[in-house]
Length: 144
Image (cartoon, rainbow, N blue to C red):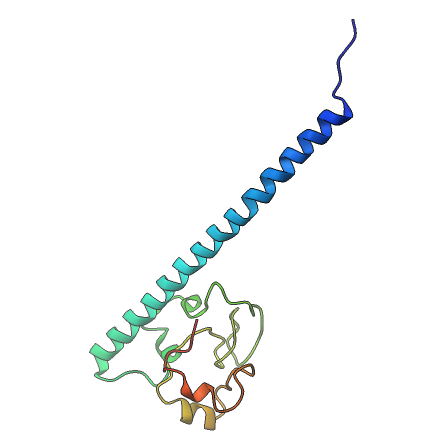
């Protein structure tokens, strides 16, 4: 009795089918990951907004920097790091977080109402890609 084995053509066809399925599935999985990151970012921004609201109710003013109130109002410092941030793993200031370091605490976004004072004191520098004069035109919440 003779054992039948796969032919080279059958193996190549099976490999081509697997490659085709992978080519179709990888973009779908990548878009699902991007959607998950967007959802996490929305949740982070919601938490930051709630922290601002609670601080405002307690003290009747907004904080000078939101990162200064994170011990009392935001227990998890990673709320300040955007999950879609391409520049993770950098270091600046005394706090180490993964995220674009537009501020000395290593966050991706923050509430900075007195940005001129913060810049004059050297607390943070504008992102180099924006160049001088353009960072000042942004809203008080740095972009995610």
